[in-house]
Image 1 (cartoon, rainbow, N blue to C red):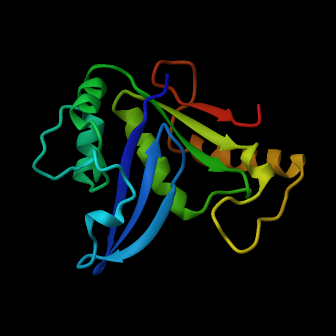
Image 2: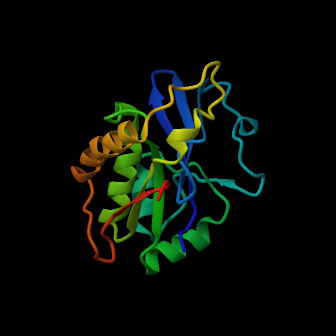
Image 3: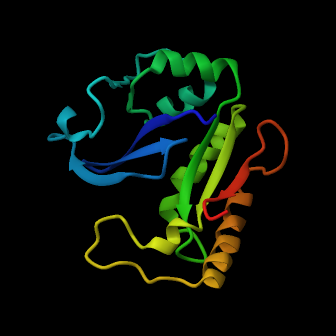
Length: 186
């Protein structure tokens, strides 16, 4: 059973904060936008009202959550105490998804890959989900034009290409915290 972990990724760029909701063990980045620090409000976050904002004053037991908090990646969590307790006691598998639309990942994927790396280094199991199936159905991001449909051969080549990137940062294998790669077209 995969555990859902909601992280709110915040990267400071001058006077602006780039925010994107990142689900580990849920899906990939579901939205991203830039808001000024002065106008960033609680209403801008598309999360449930039950989710509490996590401040730097919250003491966490889980090494993974400590790292996410210290780097400013942990923004909201609906049951932080329960998640912290679980992650401090057992290996929690979590996944991130990447579409196979190109033969390589762009630099924007590095943040998600590093989150998986930290997850693994702190005793948890990363699952890399490549979207061989979702790549076939077009772009659900609300763009004006759909992405170019690829052949199965192109998708397979792209999966091989992006898989090489993951191997540089996380360890794959059969061990309890070794990562696994899953294709949603299988």
